[in-house]
Image 1 (tube, rainbow, N blue to C red):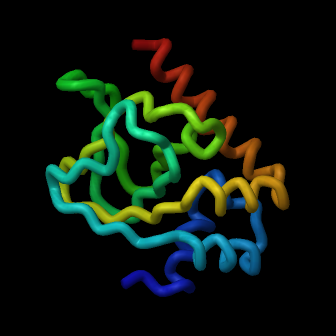
Image 2 (tube, rainbow, N blue to C red):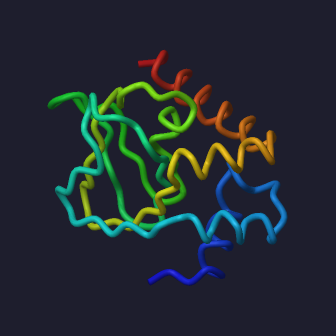
Length: 138
């Protein structure tokens, strides 16, 4: 189990949340569910309803469409962020490629945070923009 203090320290190391004071990070830490994954576990599948974003605490995952791998993500990476902004189905699948631990933040909880802290929305936009740029280079 990851303690609330450990979650706060981890959240502080993530671009999305870096600017937030510790008290607010503690609120986010309380709603972030720890989700252990074994290698090969699917976090979610393409086309499923998106209901949460994930932060990788340890391990690695791959984002893929069928057999085509789009990207590998590791510690401190965020995925599933598009689902917390819109209610569209997942645009790709995510599968653990080694044992991993993620923090899962549900869409409704995340939207509550966004309404109170619009600067987090800017962080989400940075993540999305960076991904778009990386994808367009391929």
